[in-house]
View 1 (cartoon, helix red, strand yellow):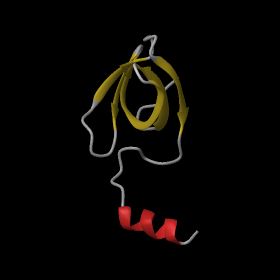
View 2 (spheres, rainbow, N blue to C red; view 1 turned 90 degrees about the horizontal axis):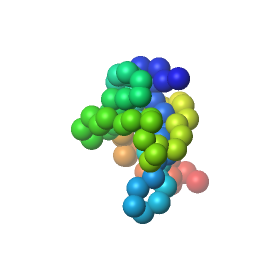
View 3 (cartoon, rainbow, N blue to C red; view 1 turned 90 degrees about the vertical axis):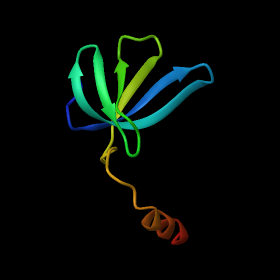
Length: 78
């Protein structure tokens, strides 16, 4: 189901409701995923958890550094 090295947008639930975040899969040993994201520590997510909702592949590398100047420039072009 998951591919090591690929990034996904994960939807999970916490005490505040549902939220999404993008992470890159570092390791996969069902039901556990080891994930990483830009500027964050690695985390472990159990896809068997009742708080796990879904995951969708994304086209970007969730662990790559973000160039905020480019993002700001892109926003100004609209």
